[in-house]
Image 1: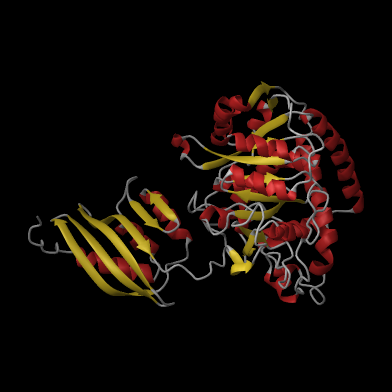
Image 2 (image 1 turned 135 degrees about the vertical axis):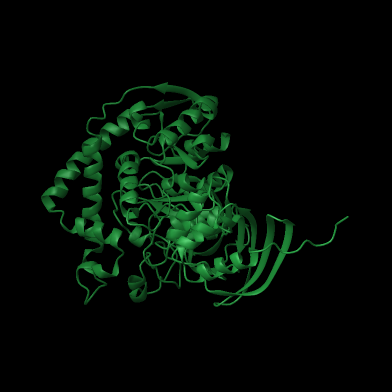
Length: 522
């Protein structure tokens, strides 16, 4: 039985309106002051929950202000003289209504928000994730092994009647519509899957971050306020959010494995040339591969049944898998990520096969990474240089975001002699990597770090570059070897935030289905 409504405490309404005024002019100092200090203050919205004043302040300083709105209704429920719940209905300038719920407490320094939840109308189309969206965009066959599934197609694959935008508005504006589906898109449709839409990518797939300068960063629901990972960023976020069940992407230097790790998904990079790249816009053909992401291993394997070539030898009588772990490779990752891999090996890994730790001759690893980067850049400039070097007849370098532009500028400076020297290093490295992996399964981190925080400050570019270089030391091994690689979701320890991370299994060429069987066995 409830008692009479308590009066609104003195000073609360004034503090609430001070907060609203500061919000509308993005007065970050006042907003920070009006949120309670300490590690237990909460702020939640559709993107996730922020815990602690410092995390909330970092988010607020980097978002560039809140959507303009006006108050429609304000309701106060007084808990006692020093605590009250304030619920406000807001009307956004762009249309639609939102709801804001705040728990206020009177502290020695005045009224402060201790917990808040904000909701605004969801956009009809989240353009950070999708370039084109349908219901579905293209319907699949009436029957088939993938009937009932939906696909987010990375904006590098041809979808008949639609242009391939490649993550760049200038390129999209001058591109002609595809006259046919890319081979893998056609295969998925024939298997009964629907194409839900065309998903965002980093520009020309030349990034591992997902931070497209033109269309924004797709959300990462498993790690709010952190980057999505790229370049198959839209496909990964669409799957993670449940907008689609299959994310079709590519992996040149890690563009399936990295977003899978950052967002807690299963992701397969296939053996180079195992799956047709017909109808795919290339970046570096020596390394480009088709891949896909799902929320569960069973569906990952079902997609493989459709897209992968038959095995030369069946799985009958297959010997026990030997997992090989190279401590030097684990140490290339941050300690929390390496620890997550070690825990996986001590649990699920040992249940799937023998685990062997050994030392590899990796003195040349940095030379391999640099050769990978050099040859990738050389091929990327051969592919895209004509369009980027001539703004009158192409799109020009000015059409690119700063991070991707810097890579293409470096690629343009690679001489034929430097490229050939890199190619020689890669040929030797490819043989050595394949010999080392042999018929075993190499276990290493899918990415060197957890997803970096998305704070739009002066240090963001440096943070993303450091994460990219560290991750490429790991991911380039499968790329150079042309080997299949499977990212299995795991998490860091609770003390490290329990963030998504990935355990990567690398097998010999053509052993993609073995990796899928291992994932399904989990």
